[in-house]
Image (cartoon, rainbow, N blue to C red; front, side, top):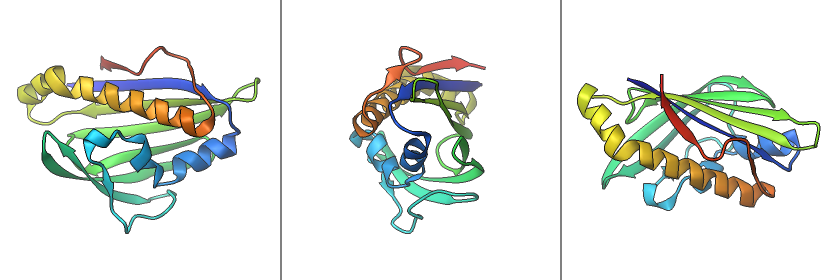
Length: 164
């Protein structure tokens, strides 16, 4: 089963400031809640670009999991897409999109298509644990972005997950 996580909000910054914030690899550590035990590989590049590979680990239910993503689309300053090439998901495709608005803010939109492994066990884990945790992660992310870029104006009340 495929799922879709979406989040949309505006920030009071220029498109260049927003792009720089999201392309700074070190910010991944800050936008991830501490309980996930996110650790970036020190050999990761400082900023992302075309074909950038990022390695990191997370702790999920006490188990250390290696995760690798590849930037498969890089269209400054409007969009980039990262794809998990190693990690806990059968599929993780994360599109980040940015567009300036007439009132001098930037609309930030995330769209993640993901699938869990293990068929029925993965679907059960999604219902019992994963969905709630992803929503918490993206609420934390939105909060950190607000503190970093001034504030956020929700364009949808909360991050949301649906079935595709």
